[in-house]
Image 1: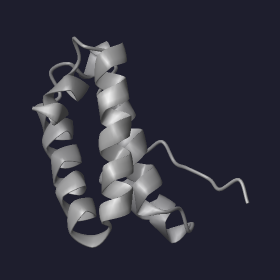
Image 2: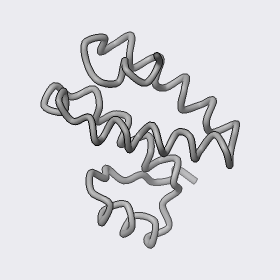
Image 3: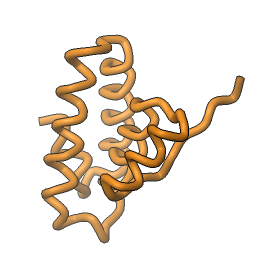
Length: 89
């Protein structure tokens, strides 16, 4: 009932998490959170990957997409000088 999540950085970790039954939304959320870390400031590849996941999420599940956008807005206010703020532009 509590659910589970995965902190995935590589595509291999994403595949293993999906095979373990973790929902795609929770994987996307973990990737979004990585964009708040200063060590990821130059990681445009991760930014593009998250943008792609968000587009995919928007096409298959509008409710989860809206939840992700709310999460992104909260994170961008809390971490304004990180890549996560690029997702709201």
